[in-house]
Image (cartoon, rainbow, N blue to C red; front, top):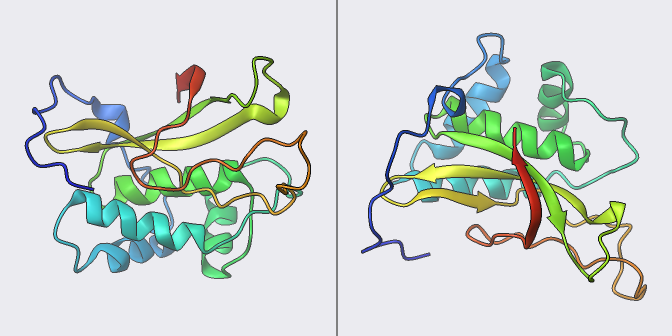
Length: 171
């Protein structure tokens, strides 16, 4: 993605998007730091962390919740997990390496009628000189197939793609 020549972002991104919990496990911090150790800029760092989380795989049969212990174990054991956990882990890893981030919950509309299955979660991160950019670190749900016309298409996984947002709320 070429971001050269874009106007600088305006305004402060705010303290909450930079805050790293003091009790974030060292394993998560270390994994993020190792992934970005040789990256030249924020975008390449985000791409490295995103690629790692896409490797986890998605398992929506897991119960909701994003305790640090669960996130640490999912990452360390390369265990498939839910969209909520992957997006949370993405935001935390980005923050731990100094990249402001936030979670966004919204709908990816596949028809004029919004269904509960259209609910998605993704991460937004600040790129210097650009501002907030959407990233989707969540792998495609293996339960969704193109053979079923009633199921929505998988969310985009490219770094700069932004889902169609009917309603969003930053967390």
